[in-house]
Length: 496
Image (cartoon, rainbow, N blue to C red; front, top):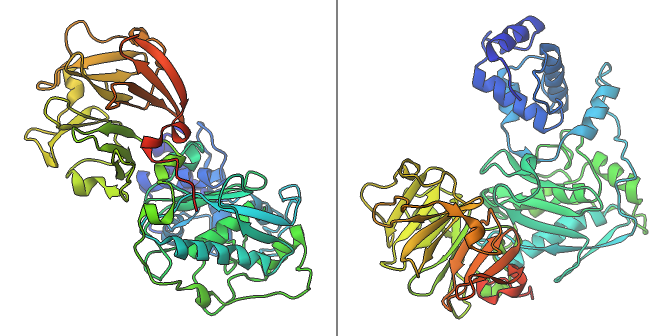
């Protein structure tokens, strides 16, 4: 959405949308508009919103957030917008706002029965979880979160250790193929989101520091809330409801308030016994103490197995490095996988979400690329003069991937339908390049990663697919799904 900020500001003042001190910054205004569009208060459009539309959207948000309803973008309203919350839109709750706007009363939600499961027993699968939480701890929390809903409805749940499952719970970084509007935004902001039946998925932001013992983001509360969405429940306008857009705190009150119970029973009915089991929040404030548990012990696949990694490369010791978001994993030739490691702790000044990584076959130095810049490290030490603005040397901005190509003894960078041969020392493009990707017969454009396997085969990755380029035949000879076919990536261990 493009907006003429100065003229829009004048319009907002006239219509009453302003900060109480009479000034609204451009940044605050833009942030508020993005927020109101993201959560359904304003239509997402490239056109400029009128001051009347903005004031109306602010009033609706204030009412749903239990703030003083003024239509003014005051300090308390702006502060509420930046609080951690669920990433699901408030559309269903907004229908309630519009229906009862004049009386301001809060009534029982009407839940569309088209958004429900048509069976009473559902299975769930825990796809992955934060490496610093133990397997047992997370499983217990997930089981308890589902049990909250089975205690007050006719539903029952059980864990499925293998595919398929009705509901899948997974942790992701940033953009994870749910669309730009659902990309996670790092610590704070939207902590998680979920999909209504019958898609059956709930996603949690890996960038948060999740906790089950009172220190950090309380995973249990967020689990229970997002599970509510997977069962068909929209957000509630009741402040103390578990399904409020802003996650509730655990205290002596019941985790589910009356509106949560009425909503789930509206879809699935009461428990067959007729007895409701309600539990206070403080009972779930602490699960078992944290205990370290290795990947091999837990049987869990690394999180990169369930999405798309940023880059992949081998070092000269035949250790595989897989990069995703703020972390990287090391996989030995024997298949041993490290826990996720911090990029910044290993390589100082390296940003998250790199676009390409490659290890030189000449001296073992690490090269990283992001945007128009590049970094070169000897082991973990950033070399003098880096990062450089490599795009000034003719290298492409935002490269797709990079490779050390043994026959040429040079780096090769891929971007779209072209490839560039690069001098390692000067990081300049060699004469007569770039050239067309047609030289690499069968290789798809816009691959997100590439590496040379120790056996000499070159693997290209795009999405969940891989292609093997045979250097002797000069063409792709094999393709498939990397998580299923390539055991050396570390994704073929099933949960046990």
